[in-house]
Length: 46
Image 1 (cartoon, rainbow, N blue to C red):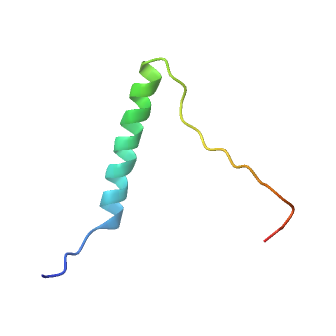
Image 2 (cartoon, rainbow, N blue to C red; image 1 turned 60 degrees about the horizontal axis):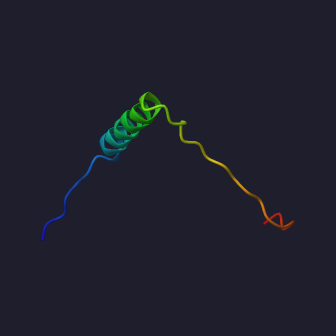
C-alpha cells in the first residue's frame, strides 16, 4: 500500500462549503441557525 498525500486546506474548504450549504437550507426551511454553547461545571480552573 502506498502513501497518499492529501491537501488539508482543500478538504477543509470543501467541508466549510458543505456546512454552509446545509445551514442555508435550514434557514430557508424556517429553522434556527446552528450555534455552539459551552457549559462550565465546577470551580477547577484546570
